[in-house]
Image (spheres, helix red, strand yellow):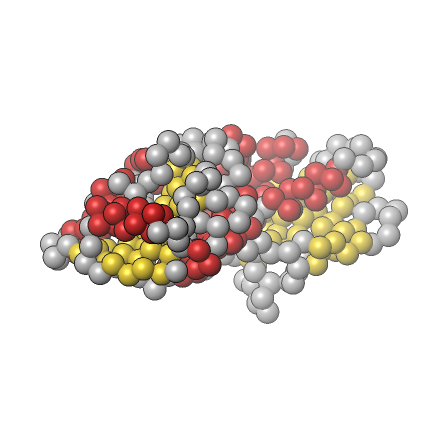
Length: 324
């Protein structure tokens, strides 16, 4: 069910939600959190679709605040709302707020009266993110704050910015996309022979912040020099291309030049094809919603691990322009 509320207020939206519940159209019981999505006009539906899919694992209230790319605070304030429940909202209830003028400049006031009582708040910027997410109006009221470096004009430069502005509770989908890679590499190193790794090479597309984070994580965990190689991607070969782990007895290679299948090569062992799919927005969002406490490992990697790669990342950014 979809209910449109043109030129409305937060109080009007709350009354409509109560009315919908009283009429038996939806029940808000069991919602475990409030997800606030901050996005621009025209980009709402992709984020809502991902949130609806993730809500089957995490029943929640979704509040979408959509606004113009350049907000004019002097324009007349107006909020057009839409409430989606039932089959149109997955296992959640979705409130879409399309704000213009001064109404778009005070996002905290827009959403405060719509938050679930005594439930955690997660903020997500699927596109352009504020300068310091923990200090943004919505970020300040959220326990977790999710950004996506790959959606920024300069992905690698944005990673350096995240390192400078990190606060506990921050996270980024560039890190979430590494989960399957990290699990596979950890599984490989958990098998004999248990020789130390003496060198690491990580390669990926020149616009892949996940490649840089993977290199930073490996450098920290293995305490070895890491070579971070980038190349222009073509024929769909974006993201991470491969990892080489060097031992004195031979080299382990995990390569995924394109598609969702990686090839694992190890000394004195058969070659294996491994499913290593590129993660969807739904998968990344659902994973981040599984934990509402700060991700300490991400914090360590973004603050300390990247510093080992900064010199190389600077040269990459300069040679590739914006990095996209």
